[in-house]
Length: 63
Length: 462
Image (cartoon, rainbow over all chains, first blue to last red; front, side, top):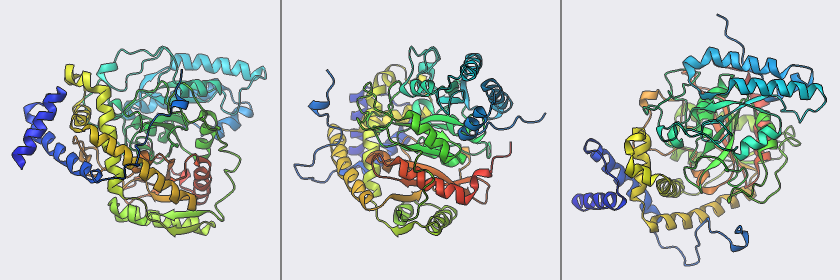
């Protein structure tokens, strides 16, 4: 599990083009795990009609 | 050498100017206070002393000629250094913007200038409103005037410090997860995060487009109301600016709290791990409001964890979108704390972001429903007295998220109000949270509390 998480962590950094200095890698990895744990509370099914906030309304769009 | 006295509050200064005080004398007093304290407190990044004095002379001429623009005409103020003011640097306290000169004013600077206020300078901040108090940056970080070794709060650290130390009566801050309310709380002043969309963000360096709020820090509640009277109003240059009337913050300010229903969010405070000192202070504040005639009832807020998750996911994603290219190309230009916190956005997926926005709408609706049945929510503004700077969590992802953040996610206005001091002599604070665009009610409650509690007369010994 830990290896798989580590691979995801490194893959996401690679995809984003972000380089972490080796001496900060363990700290960032733990922060990544803490982030994923917090964000996981949002990953429950919501009704199809549950729209996101901050949707622009066409009527409010500036010309 | 005798320390020059603190500047008067905005209301006091307005009365003194009405009675004939010279705006030049007021400006000179502010500059003398700053000169004496700045070597210890580091509140300012840029001091615009010459232009401020010239503007004060012009204000004096205008007022003498009967052209007073309003109660705030001739009074100095300062901006967190993420607000643009034409021809002055906007650095965001970062090497990346060290040589950035603003070409035009932010909306806040425009409105305060139109009211006759005079910009004294630009204030220290945590880098890009995101870093920490020990980042190694081109300018020192601001120090808490109650104890120089303790955290001043952030990110609007210079704003809290400048107001608490009596350098200015009004400083503008910005608040993405608590960055107005936390320095206000730790420095013992008043700080308002208005409703999302109430004040314009035009000309302010962004951190998270949908979480950023602008707002005032002042020493008194009345000053906050005076500032809001000038600052509020629709701005078509800000796509999030709400097309609503600007509001009236003064006419009901002294109406008291009799008959108002205030929800006390005990469980929210417990979940936020506030300490016993802060819990006692909140209990005493609630009792005082009850003695003044408010009805205090227990209230359950939506899940703290869900609100924190919404805030963090959205903030990380939006902040990363803004900084990604610089984080790739010149990461060493950022302070370590700022860099790592911004890099955390690399871990947010598209579905994380959308899911957070879906929950956000739900949570904002739930909070607003509660606020349709209560005039305000009362909860803690911090978890305890300011920690020592060396004890502040400066990790890339905090172990405990700020107690202020949930109301950035849900968007309602939240006001930080001083409620006394802990055994270590540091300020304590409450948050009053209101319905969307209900800032006037929060100020009314806070004013009644402030007048009865009397904390306002206590100032830091400097």
